[in-house]
Structure formats: C-alpha cells, structure tokens
Length: 158
Image (cartoon, rainbow, N blue to C red; front, side):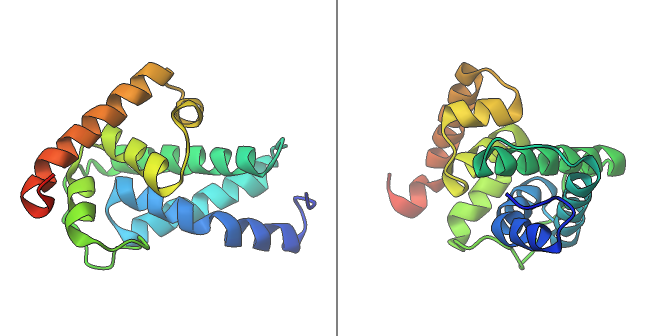
C-alpha cells in the first residue's frame, strides 16, 4: 500500500473506488450532485482518519460503508424521501426498466441489491459492511428479488 499522505495513493483510491462509491450513493440519494458530494466527503474522511486496512477489499468495504452512512445522513438532514429519478444515471448498466425498478425499492432493499449485484459482494460481506446479521441480508435480498420479479413480470415474462 501507499502512504496515506501520498498523492499517488489518493489517485489510486479515487480511480479504483469512486465509481462504486458514486453508484451506491446515487442508489440512496437519487441525485448525481448529492452522490458526488457524499463521495467527496467519504474521501475527505479517509484522508482525515487515515485508517489502516488489511487489504484492498477491506479498504473498499470501509469506503462503501462510509459513503452509505454519509448518504443516509444527507437524507435525514434534508428530510427528502421522494425525489424524482434523474435522466443522468451514473450506472454502467443502463437497462432502464430494471434500473427504474431497483430505484423504486425501499432503501434497505436497494442498498443490498446494489452491493450484491453491482459490487459483487457476498451475503457475508454485505452483512459485515452494513452491520446486519447474515440472515437479515439474505432475507432482504430474497424479498428484493421477489419485488423486482413482480415489478418486471410484464417486461420479461419471468
């Protein structure tokens, strides 16, 4: 790993994790500018706190957890629960019908779907990131899939 004070380290961290962090923040905030603010704040906390990581997966999990917490705090502070979905969605997979359905899910399901399908975390890893029991993560993932299946039934004949 690089020294936390080095520009090279910061450049590598931003390059490696900013897309994932932006996606998870957007899934909660539904606003690109707010998501960008949350990601920037998470990087500032990384620089300020200078945590030590066991490996790159630990580093990514920490950054995602911080981004999720910042995003939730932003939602609480603004009291905004229902914002319109914007056209400039930062997700790489832009299958709009699936993405619109995912974005319509409650936050507790949306976050788990994002971490599982977009970030490729296992249920055990998501459990650790969100500080939830594995059974809760599995149940929420199952419920989210069921909700998505119902929502997408007409589009894909599942």
